[in-house]
Image 1 (cartoon, rainbow, N blue to C red):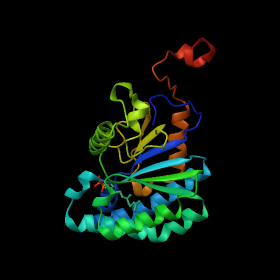
Image 2 (cartoon, rainbow, N blue to C red):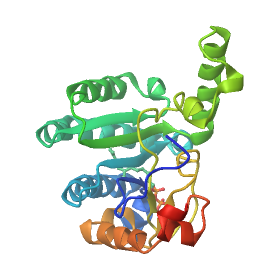
Image 3 (cartoon, rainbow, N blue to C red):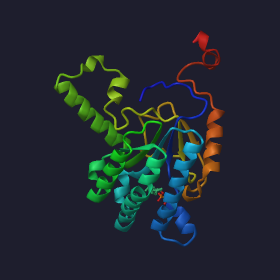
Image 4 (cartoon, rainbow, N blue to C red):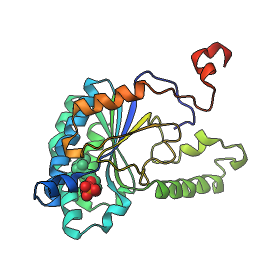
Length: 249
Ligand code: FPP
């Protein structure tokens, strides 16, 4: 949300680009949807692990705006998996007091997936300690476009003075309004791209790349990523000395 967040020893918000489902399936002679099914199991493990490790916010890149370009059978399988995930996991989210959010052009999802998503979001709306954010039909560039449109409408309505708006004011128009910026972004499967994920929000995030394919990712991998994060010095533009002795900042 803001350009400079508070320094936490452990990440309070982790974003994950869950990659490698297709390769996991191929290595085993399975279909790509089977890889996604195993990926969904890893997703459940990641949600559990975050709560066990005290990570309050988890954002998962579950379906990018570009993923519509995949073969029809794969898109269909991913949407079915999303509905199945919501049907199975909503009870667990409620039990664990985890609030569900969705970011992306949600209204463009198939009607049944959209409905299931809204239902799960409403059912968990009262919780505030733990947050699961699903990025669906998500693209950072679309997010900036949508935010600019929303901002322009507020200016036209006389609600905002554009000359007096700072980043925090503009960020209120992003899908992630009200959520803290990610501290740590993890990408699995050995790829080292950002792929249009949380580009604005990751301005000060640390990145962690692992060769592990997403269906193989478990709590031990998350612990390794957090351990790596702990060894980093986040400066937010300041010097190392200023960070070491905040009184001189
Ligand atoms: C990237 O792997 C993964 C995706 C495009 C989809 C992510 C979906 C899941 C992990 C499962 C479902 C999650 C929820 C929340 C229902 P890839 O297919 O690009 O892998 P590849 O690069 O090896 O081909």
